[in-house]
View 1 (spheres, helix red, strand yellow):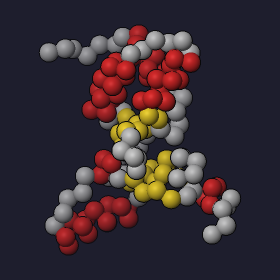
View 2 (tube, one colour):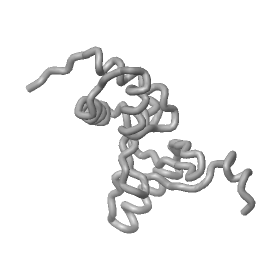
View 3 (cartoon, one colour):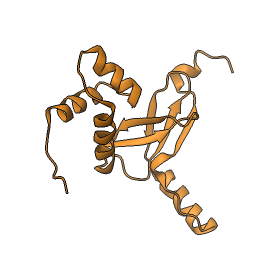
Length: 135
C-alpha cells in the first residue's frame, strides 16, 4: 500500500486550488496550470483531488450537466452543509446553520430517510445578481 507523501506536483496543485475561491472543475484547474506552463497530467489531478476529497479538504458536487466541481472546504464547515450556487455568477456559499440540522432531523424522524449531505446544492440567484435582474 502506498504511503502518504508530498510531491512537488501535489504542492503545486494545492497552491493552484487556492486561487479558485468559488470552486472549479478539473478542466478549469488543468487549463489554469497549463496557462502557467505547469505540466501536470489529468490522472495526477484526478488522483490528488480524490485524495483531498477523502481527507475532507475539498468537496465534490455535480452540476445540472453532471459535471464534477470541487470546492475547498472551510474548516468551520460541518458535514451537514447545504451549498447555494448562483446560477448567474456561479458563486458558491455554504449554508451551515441550525435550521439545516432541524431539517435533517425532521426528514429522518418524520420520513425515516437519512440524507447524505455531501452533494446538496440549491441553485438560484445571489443578492448581487438578483439586483441586476427585474423579477
